[in-house]
Length: 96
Image: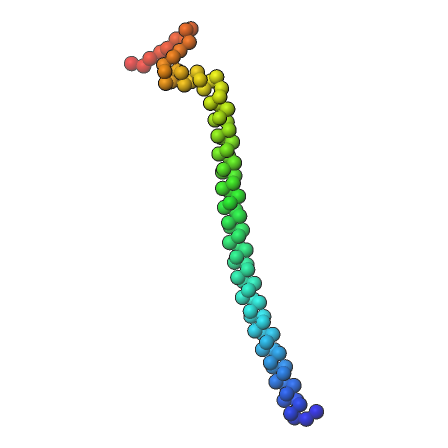
């Protein structure tokens, strides 16, 4: 091997090393970006899960209220509170 061949070999190795370093830096940046995006998605998923649970609770309460509205108890409560109606055998106490 001559001097020219050794110099060419060193230059080739240096070029390959630079390319590898640039690729590693690029990949590191991409990995960091993906990590942050993943953290955002995890936080969004938690918020949406909480919202879903709240809406499910609300739907349950509305379902219970709908059953109550259709009941005889609701009719009696409404008649007593809004219309002042009472049963014949009830005793009413009024505050002074």
